[in-house]
Image 1 (cartoon, one colour):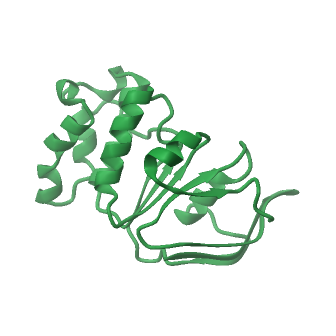
Image 2 (cartoon, helix red, strand yellow):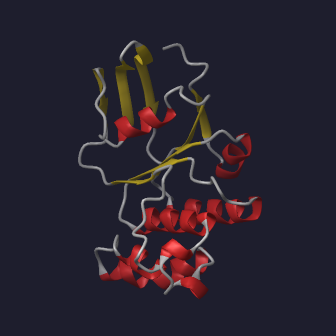
Image 3 (tube, one colour):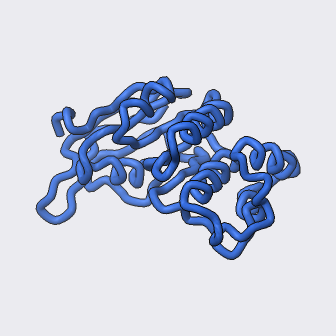
Length: 194
């Protein structure tokens, strides 16, 4: 379980969170929703330990393996699709899953192409695939479906749910349909009293 306890965060005079507490159960699927600039990405960055709360603390993430998909794909542009997936594999078992992942991502035909020549939607699928292949306890995805058409999004949701079994899955989104597809609980931060 992840516990955010009395978390406060601000940038200059702009208060993002003030005395915010929330619990995320083990195995939960959570969609964080809210207006742009409301703190969705800041919350993810605190969970990833990329930013610290000004006050309060977060429990349940120490010694956990957390993998992320950021709003930017953060791929290795000159590496092939297969090489980008291979770079997160630490075991023979993970490496053996690359071909299966390429098939699930519908990218087998492009596996030897450098990712820089692929479309934004294809690159997005690779970023998701890398996060899923890496060993993890918690998956944190920031707007993971941007640039994907509806059918591709539905396919990717199925892949994510297959690999996220028994893990905590946290996704930021603006789209109510994403919540339904993921079968997720919603944290609507616009309505939270901070």
